[in-house]
Length: 384
Image 1 (tube, rainbow, N blue to C red):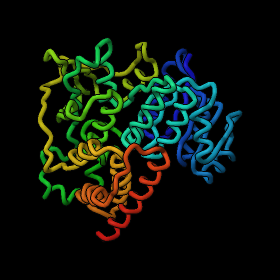
Image 2 (cartoon, one colour):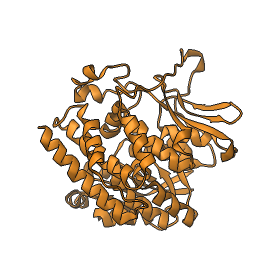
Image 3 (cartoon, one colour):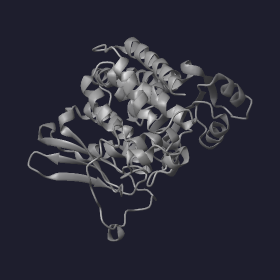
Image 4 (cartoon, rainbow, N blue to C red):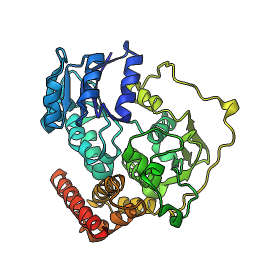
């Protein structure tokens, strides 16, 4: 029986992780939940799973939650509560599914407490990959990827030696605007952007997928998860989202992991690793797949992918700044303050103004994150 904590339990990954846990009560016990401010949904989750701890970062929402009938579950609030859930002694595995830079501190705290990390917060490794992986190695902590692409690579590498990797191949659906020109994308609406053709995800990651920034974040994540240089990480557009990623080995063999576009499978694999568990998820019907196609990404129409590669290679505080600028720009787009194409413009302008700090620690990363957010807001204000 593994005791699980979920940070970000009311989001897309968090709610699907709860489905996985509910389906295998003989394998998993949920002992801690944390979310931002959705007290209504968190109350229902508490009623169903009866965790020891529940946290809302928003203190007003936490006060509302305390007024509900939550049984014996202890209610905590703020960043202190979040860190308490991440380090709660009975927990074996922490699912880090919070969105954005906010996931960094609790992930580091969970690592310091010796917890296994089921990582669904890619921004943690984008902003602080060297710091996080160094701490994980020092503490002997295992980081298991939850992203479907990184789960696929992780599965393909089981039993293989790193020296045999020629390249990692991350697949991307291409999002809702695949094959669109930049002129056509200049008129994109938020509704169109959130209509992902294959995956049901939260708003932020759905916009990131449409700009291909999400794939750029995954490239940086792959560099740290697998200790592979950027020259050996490739992105390919695969509209069907059946092949979740591939590894090419030095002998020319390519190993791929396939499955339906269902996040519950990589979530379950991360929770059950090194075992595989039966489940009732729909299975892939290989006889009715239709053609599987692959194409190169269009870096002119989607410059976000190149921006991410360049930021990753620059290192230091640059990826952290890119991530922060993206978070602010995406939020502005979702609120109708800027256009879809402005997202990558804002990111590049912030990066152009940034003075890099090499080998940053947590204080330097937090300072860079704050600076980038303010700079992005200033640029957005100038566009109005």
